[in-house]
Amino acid sequence: MDLLNDLVDFFGRNGYLAVFFALMLCGAGLPLPEDISLVAGGIITGLGYGDVHTMVGVGMAGVLVGDSTMFLLGRHFGGRIMSWRLVARLLTPERYAKVQEKFERYGNRMMFVARFLPGMRTAVFITAGATHRVGFFRFLLLDGLAAAISVPIWVYLGYFGAHNHEWLAMWIRRGQTGVWLAIAAAVVVLGVIWWRKKKAARDC
Image (cartoon, rainbow, N blue to C red):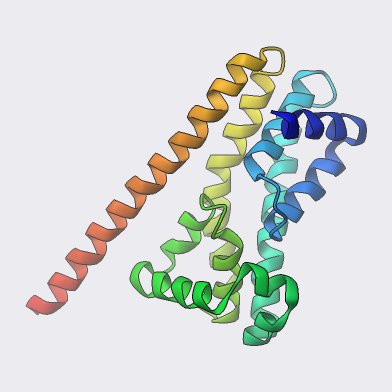
């Protein structure tokens, strides 16, 4: 919880703008947990340093700007972006190949699922842009739909738990576990859909 306390202190002193830029940098691959940043944004509103509904909007804007920046950089520079030192750390040739394999298997649905995969999110968005797998507006729609699920959950959790740290810590753990269970369920569903399509194609 030390990181959470540090973020609450920083956001409390600097307000919405600090939350926005922190989330934008999360999208750019900064090793800062997005969920904890969103919870911290919610906590400061619960402590009276802002409005929780406005914070949800700020959170949405921050994550979408960060994600879109990575997508558009990939789209503009293509494969050349792999030579950038910072990008090379996030997107090794092996990971790049793995992400492309996932796109082949799951298609554009990867855009939605990637929002819930902190370790893969930036790599997926850069790859989607660099390989022109999906248009920008479709990317924004899929990413936005996923963000509309995750962002309010974490911000409101912080808001309601601002004065009860034990309760908040418990629900952060539960929330993180729930996200991974949801991802596992989504992977299973996507796998079944892919298998049925492949089977139907063989039968034709």
